[in-house]
Amino acid sequence: MDDYTWRRRLAARRRRRKIERSVLAFLIVIGLSFFVWYFTSYTKTPLYAMTTALEELQNSDAENFKSRLDLGAITAKAYDDLTVDMFKYDTQLSAHDRTLFENFYVLIRSQMCAGAIKVINARLDTGKWILPEEMLKGRQLGIDFDLFLERSLIRHTTIVGVENVENLGETATADVKVVEDYSQTPFTLKVTLQNFGSASWHVARKNFELFGLNFKFPGLSFSLGDSDWKVIRVENYKEYLDSTAPTLRRDVAEYIDSTAEIISRYNETFQAEQSQFISLQRTSDGIMNSNQRAQVADYIAQTIIPMLQYRQAELDGIYVPQGASYLANLRRESTNITIQAWQNYSRGLIEDDQAAFFTAESLHKQELALDQRIEEIVHNSAITKDLPDLP
Image 1 (tube, rainbow, N blue to C red):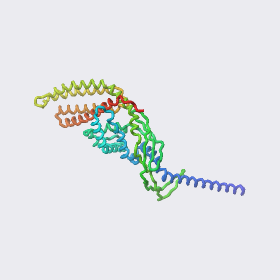
Image 2 (cartoon, helix red, strand yellow):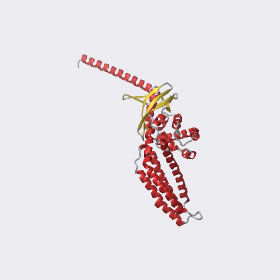
Image 3 (cartoon, one colour):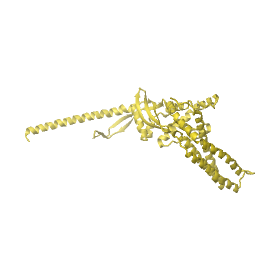
Image 4 (spheres, rainbow, N blue to C red):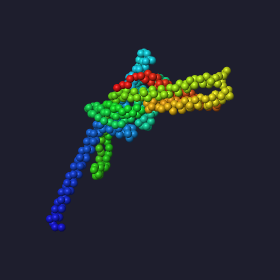
């Protein structure tokens, strides 16, 4: 190779290296600019808060997801929307009683919201809907917290996506796409976010990778600020309830109508058998002898429990529309608990086991609570059956 060619190739190599260094420097500057923008600007936007919250929910990152919500503010507004017309269509209530009920729900607002927050947190932490123990006792005060949650739709609403996040300064708005699972009704919830100020944490970084290149900075730390935007309200929650109500009402009414003959027939049968059951237990001194106890236990095993099983089998043979799933499940649960109560009562008779009697009594109380819940759903269905569908 002559000297001229060698020099020309050397110059070309130098120019190429210079260009490569310039490109690399440019990419580093762009990368660092993006890095700075991302952690100092974008992570403090409501768009980041909403998209990250959706990812955290989908990935079951409970702690971080909960930090995106002001559950106290959200549940307070939702409670008002849910209870605003709860007794509006009950013509059996006098104006005085309706006012008493409405005032009562105002008085228990804080307890009900606190209970809802516990339920939501438990769901996020465990994946299960767990009712707080104190709220389970609410039936004694006229509160059926489980039915209240069912009416809220929270247990069968699926979040699909987030759109149209708009920053308004100290507040922001966003569209949250959801689907009500029973009716498969799509809806767009309008949520409001609020900026609660700046917060950051200090994170040490020893290695930094950019475009496949690894840069080492021992001891270098970055102060990475996260978003302080939190959802504080669902503005159109009442509209969401109203949008799903027609389908859910129709499903419940259809199921009640299709099972009415079964319920009526077995109610008459149970009433007829009740006389026989009372007769078997009748004594002169209030104490049954061993033979009498055995007869009663046999009557429970051969007549009462099979009748409950036959009735449930007939109910299970009826088509259940999605919106009536809750009612159908309540009836099934009531049957199972009732059978367990009778079995324990029978064991108490045969074995003279007081613990079995106490268990039977406890199960009977659970059954009564379930039956009261069922009756309330049937009652509400009758009240709202002829209501016109909202546009």
